[in-house]
Length: 179
Image 1: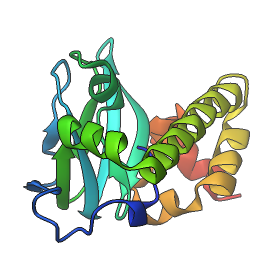
Image 2: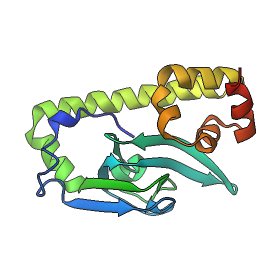
Image 3: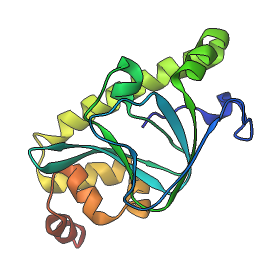
């Protein structure tokens, strides 16, 4: 998920820019693993999990909720197939645009290009911080850090997905939240 200032995009009713519209049922994939996707979406309603499957285990990388932009960033930026998938956690309404429209906006709108660069830098820092916190930290610290930095996740995302995101069993997360 990329946090871009949505005000810098064309209005959401601009059908020329927001040419993609999807309604996705709970548990349906927006982008399947091991595919290529060059679309970026705005979550109008619902929630998406971004993840990969590794050795028959699901690893959740991030979440996108109402008002967030989401895409398979690996595929979107590289132009290649990616193991990353996007899956609806609940019934979700998306609007989106292609990489070609995005590139055109970057070329012709300096403010948008600057906002995008800052958002990408912020995302890189977020990913690095997650690795720094996630791997050496005990489970309680991981939960506390997520509560501190992303309390909205606990309001919109089912606990089992939060547990997987933190690398915990759902029972462990439940036990830690009781204290």
